[in-house]
Image 1: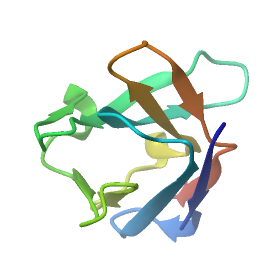
Image 2: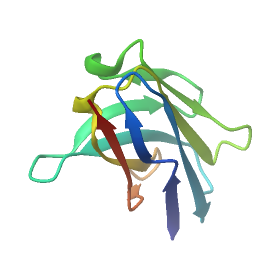
Image 3: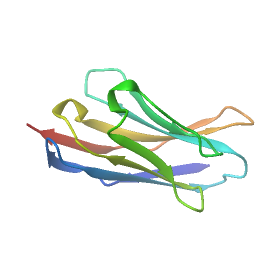
Image 4: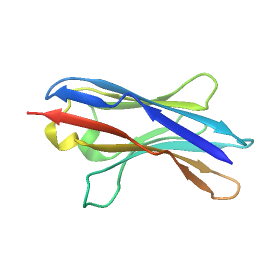
Length: 117
């Protein structure tokens, strides 16, 4: 089993910054990508960013130039540096691992980010 724990959420004013962290533990023996998603209550979960096992990054257009996804040296930790935050970034942010060889996905429980105007 794989466990993911997110942290770093909180309340910030528009224009401010937050850094989210996600630590994965458990039976991770193969290559995987790590992603961030977000969800506003009542809405569908929205893709935010991905970092591949090799370090290639990808972002949804709405966060490009403001958010940066990165991995720790041990590769079981992923970060999301969020700058110039906007009220529309308010959501619960979830971390996900996608295992390449079997297509399994694992999710964390999320961390709440609230951006006030």
